[in-house]
Amino acid sequence: MLSTFHGLEAARRAMMAQQAALYTTGHNIANANTEGYTRQRVQLEATTPFPTPGLNRPNIPGQMGTGVEAASVERVREYFLDIQYRGENSKLGYWEARADAVAKMEDIMNEPSDSGLAKTMDQFWQALQDLSTHPENEGARSVVRQRGLAVVETFHYLSNSLTQIRTDIGTQIGVTVTKINSILDQISKLNAQIAEIEPNGYLPNDLYDERDRLVDELSKFIDIQVEKHPVGGNALPAAEGTYDVYILNGNEKVYLVQGRTASSISFPDGSDVDGDGVKEMPPSEGIGTLYVGGESISFSNLPSGKLRGLIEGYGYYENGANGNVKGLYPEMLANLDKLAYTFGTLFNAVHEQGYGLNGNKGLAFFSGLDQVNGAAKTIALASDIDDLDNIAAATRDKESGNGNNAINLANVRSLLLSNTTVSLQDGISVDLASLGLPLTSGTIETNYQGWIGQLGVAGEQANRMKSNSETLRQSVEERRQSVSAVSLDEEMMNMIKFQHAYNAAARQITAIDEMLDKIINGMGVVGR
Image (spheres, rainbow, N blue to C red):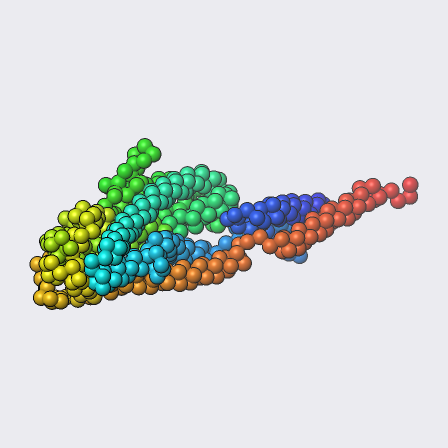
């Protein structure tokens, strides 16, 4: 037969279970604004009914329920949405870094404007046109010299500014790598704590939340994959185990975190700025490979993420450590050097064939053009041009009113660089093949315009893709929040629901107590 106190035990269990549910609801409400928090739910399960099947079971109509128990406290989270979010977050990190790098370059190049290189060179060509009209005028010659100096200073400014921004990006890469390594270390420590708790039959939900928050943050820096591994023992079926975090090097998995062990990202030829033994600062030339622990990873195997976007701005080797340095800033700096060298060398080639007012011939207008690399930083006005009479505006000696070579110099802007030889006024010609110019197609103007056009297209694409990635990530985040976020309205309804259930269980105990009181104190007193 059933125990006299059977109903009391069922009601007690109900009160304990509803109380646990109320406490969990309070925990949700308290963390409604906590970043990364996932709402929790108590999983209520009916306890084992009485009696269990057997030969000695009591003869009662059937099994009687024995109440309820709180089996576990679990997070309400959908892992598939986490995977989607991290993928979109990685893309957003890449396009944000690229858009920022392009925006800074656009600010420096400042085209089209009244202070950019194109306008400065236009003013220089115009000054030469004016000189051709008044070749003997000292004021016109002074303007040519000053406009030439302005072109030189603009080249210097652009080269130095781009170099400084590139250096800043290198510093940002170092900070990013340090941040990544710190996150990897924190994830491995959380894995260790989780691995100690789960075998005891508990679900460390708050540790899960912190670990997932760190993985979400990590996904913005680098495109990662996550594997779950059970820890064994008496772990519950809902236990998530430890996280192994890895990136793909081709088809090979390279682990950033494996259980309780974290690897560090470093650059083999970089520098260690904080003395921790990890070379987090990239080499000044460019990046060919990264190290994860002791394993080398090619830059090309970083599909997305902020780190890749920064490296593309800073500079990288296309084929490991061989070949030319590619990247947004190295390529623009190289283009500026090519433009400065081609402009200065071609201008000198024409200028050296003309005559100054004093009859001097063969003088260069620009100096500092010994090599293409660094030409934008080293180009300068030749010291001979300090004497304005040495500006070779004439094609013939002792003709002070001859400004034909000034016209030739002004026409340098539109000379086709693909020609082997170009012929100018009064029999002056230039053998382009012998000059070894780095630019061999188009004109000086069209080459610069093409680079600025490419920069504009790159900026437009980066901003468009950044906006698209942000929209996609936000869409996934909204779906994720609809599953995992705390709704205060829902929690208030749950609180009322669990409160009423608790009160009903307490009322049941009162009712059973009254029944027992009647049995104990009211029975067997007939006739007294």
